[in-house]
Length: 133
Image (cartoon, rainbow, N blue to C red; front, side, top):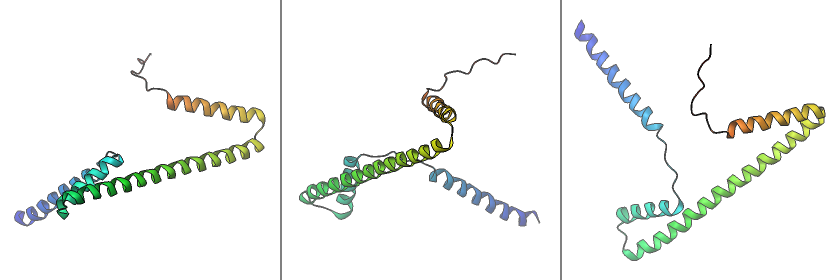
């Protein structure tokens, strides 16, 4: 009877351990690379897997660098476009709110936003103040 329980319990423990290991590797963050580093890494991989000659390596390196820089530029252009759209939406939102709120209410809203921005940009406190009773 005990022998019949040991096998399923062991299988359950092994399964749980492997699932936990997969979770940890999935959350690992990669650090961003610049275009030149990505191009060099890709060229080195192609050199070893495709057995490129030295002439081919130089030409492939130039192609990889050109492509990596183009991808990076496109990513930055997309970010600039998103930022511009976000600013336009914010301006539209503010205009609609201004039409509904009284001038005093709108000023309070702007003051709340300023305080929130200051709070967000302020460096974190080094130590919490001692609790006073």
